Image (cartoon, rainbow, N blue to C red; front, side, top):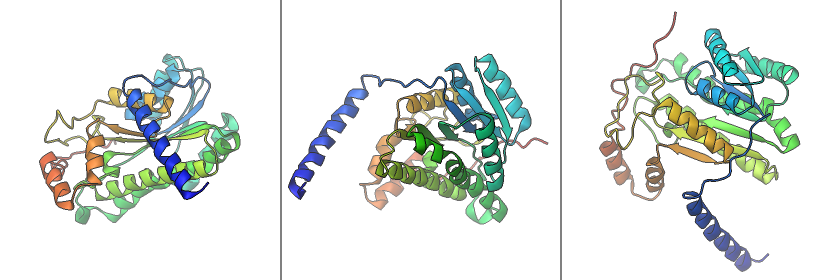
Length: 305
């Protein structure tokens, strides 16, 4: 196809896809059935991971729960079984350790089967200024928040490619799209998570593995305890999100094969503006939205003995 025809085709399809997306703002997309799928969720012992486990269980999926917290896993498993899950499997796994991920992944493949929906949800936050962040904590942030994604994809993606069926879900953050004060290592890990997921998605399309889908989730602060103490300048514009709301939106995005989910909705506009306005306007918006001081009163999740 020559340059003129291919350019015309791209223009025509672009107009069509834009109109299609506008229609889907009004008309709900069809939701795929996840009954019988094997869904692996990291960080399933609490918070969003637990809620996603319960929701997938209620939809008839086989849920595979990973966490380093044994008591949290037991409680999620109990609740999942109450929610109607036919099969619930729990595994203690330290997602900061590559060999632990590979070892437990092999167990899952032998005892449960090939994972068809992988949800990288486990994450940690330091919440300190860069100059005050210990090296060990910054390394741990990178190990859990992004390196673990490498190893879980390595473990489970080949089977998805072989069957041309699967779904890769990255629970990232708005901090993976824009820098935030006191979150330097966290932002670095989440930017990496977004870029990694997008790059793998591009590889799947290049290999014509169109049955392997990707969903990247970028929420603002969620009221799970992880960001206790954080405040937003304009709560009506950028509220602290409730976990139940976030989990439900994630499930819907996965079932509708939505590639990018930003929560709440206003960041879609802000993200678009970021790419076209001058740097000084970006800085002005950061001051207006209070993102330079959101973490000033950060406490974080209390550590259990």
